[in-house]
Length: 334
Image (cartoon, rainbow, N blue to C red; front, side, top):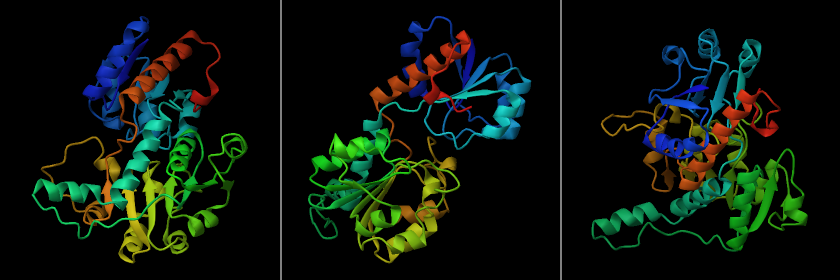
């Protein structure tokens, strides 16, 4: 099987090349450009393509790939909201993903964002670098004894629940499919509640929900109005979960005391790119202007352990498809 990797940077090559000796039947090529209709033509002669979170897997891209003989779309990520699933099914394309690689990596980053934004760690670091040792403007709040609201208690959300318990927090969970074992056996969720209760009672809210029509802009003016004054909000899931303009209004009104974002609505044009020479005029630049907001560039997953797990699962998916047997259900999108 010949696989063409799109959006492939040095760290992708390193992680996959390290695992490839265990997969002698696979031939891999790397392409740094994003997958979109214009670049899809590069896949001629390949059996599969490997895409990432910013890849454009719209109907046009999928039609071009299928016309070139591509049979398999390998996503080296968990989310698949960038894939036109109906078109993939109609074209007979199999789409596979990596449902879980290192939930702890993302959960740890989420807590790191909360701490950085709440305790103004980045601001303090920059001050000391300039020999300013003053503390004005760096005041934060304790997390110990506070209430954490975890929206989405899958593997990542559950990992953050464990971290929050370690901080001495009361943990509320909210999920369309509550995992009662987290309450009864692990004792890391104190109770499951609906979204409104999460907003009303939580001092720290972290988003780990899937992005779909129902969850799009779940954090909006209405939901922010229900939150405690000074709430800490973190999003490491998908940018579309948060209405950016509503978030900005919430920060300006002091309803949101601190925000940590690894994902945001406009990230498609920024993530994984060096734009240090560009003048960026967008709502993203507005967010970056707030002293109580910390933004990272979709790096929550970015650990040695996670990259290794992503590589192995992606290559396992390719082998399973090639063998033609039963595919691992959690890995199959369509």
